[in-house]
Amino acid sequence: MQLLFFLALAAVAIAGALGVVLSKKPVYSALSLLVNFAVAALLFITLQAQFVAVVQIIVYAGAIVVLFLFVIMLIGGDLTGVGGRTRMRNVASIVAVVAGVLLLAGLGYAVVAGQMASANGDVPGQGSVQAIAQMLFTDYLLPFELTAVLLLVAMIGAVVLARKPAEPNT
Image (tube, rainbow, N blue to C red; front, side):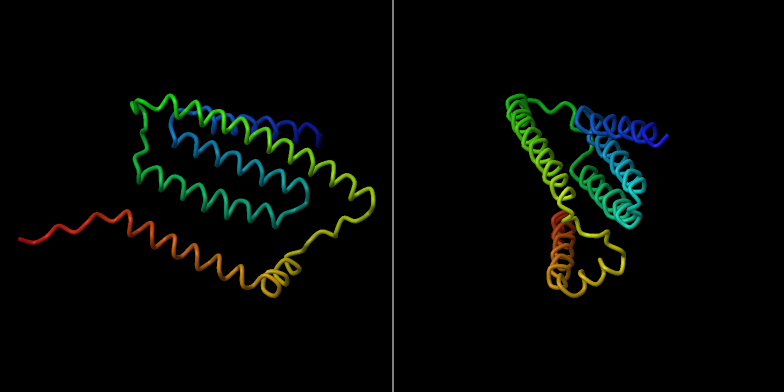
């Protein structure tokens, strides 16, 4: 039963990933990305990692996809009819294939290294919310605060750039 559930989630995740890559409209790509993030959260729940699943939903599905949709709507959601981009698309396709191959190689290495570590018994225990909070607010407090400041500056910069210039009063 667990295998069938995993296979169903895997099929939905692959369909969502294909929707991100193959969709001609950016809004549909962002919504397919939302489906993919939701499926990843469900997979985390099957692994008994509820905290990571909730963070996945809040941060990625909630914030990142909304930010993507905001940017898509800000720059114009319909990019059909844009001509002269075939050469750029070919270069982007080649870069995407190379990045995909590198990603798969890194994933394969991570799986093999993880299996070797688990065979040696070097895998650390599962982190609870308390353990994550302890590390976040003691060892990693400065990077956590710098990330918050960086996100605030980026948000203010996006609002300033999106603002229409004031017309002079004559």
